[in-house]
Image (cartoon, rainbow, N blue to C red; front, side, top):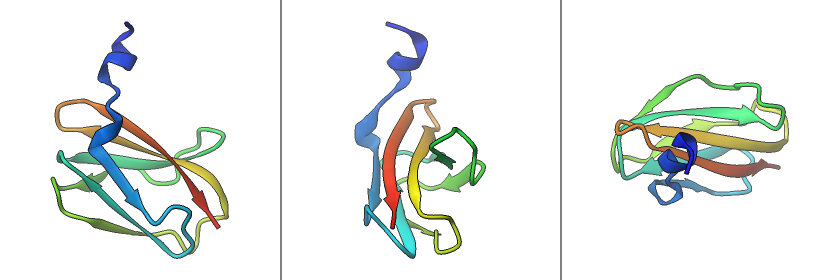
Length: 87
């Protein structure tokens, strides 16, 4: 198993609503940082802090509609990746 696949843990990150238009709620069972990445790999946001079990609201109203990925890196260096659609 590669180092990257060993660090991927999908169950730690929750995002809602998905699809979304105005905002996203993001929550994780670990503290860490997240970034929003477009379909081409371009970072839309950089390393936004999130606290364990505290929902964080992200305004997406100014972001172009499309498919994005939310990448979360926990304080334990586990990576979660979630696909989301902005309508």
